[in-house]
Length: 341
Image (tube, rainbow, N blue to C red; front, side):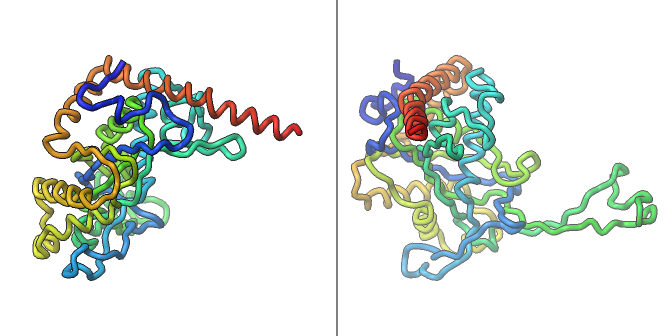
């Protein structure tokens, strides 16, 4: 039985997860908005890239942008899904431990993929690429001086070895942080969706709130979904979408230390993606803006009730187990038989 009423499920979704690519894609149009001071870094430095500012000739000069790599986006989202699978008792820690011992037969493993050496692997059906900040690097981050207080609440030591009571310690470090209200346009693509896998990924994007390093202390981020695109191929890149948004702002606003107006960003992002989609040579059905609101409301209503959440997860997990039984176990049996020859 279909869980959705606002989309044509027979047209846009498979009845079961196919083994080979079948040319159906759904693209989630997301703008990720920082709400604290997250860290997207490698080797203690914020990730950044030197890229062209915009698409127009006037904005052809290169600038540095903050970069949010693929794993910084997909890992927190799949962990939220795994948490829900455990909560509703479709998965246990003993059956499947992330990056240690994958269970191979649950919704997370089949949708987001896994690799277990010679034991087998499954390619992720969720495609996420690096996302870039709209604003330049210099206007999107700031450096903090960090130190650690003692139990007295001061920054002074209390007679530790090698220090005198009341002496201020030298435990000071500097760390670059991304500012609040920095915007990262990001397209999350799900290949060959069923209704259940579509809802599973949709829910993970909506629910995930922390990204980057030190996620228990900072890294608060909100995902604003602008729409979804059903298509028979992939659409434009995150970088190109970001550059098209950049073109729609004046330079004074972009180079200001004040954050961009969120309502204006969403309007420009919607305008930019619609223009880019019009340039695509693929068959597509897009639900953006007012056309997207009924679907978003329906998904939120479904996932905000225990009955709806359980029904969604049960359907996704049943499809995953069927897929594992049909294709992964057979592939394992073939490998074993081949090894015995």
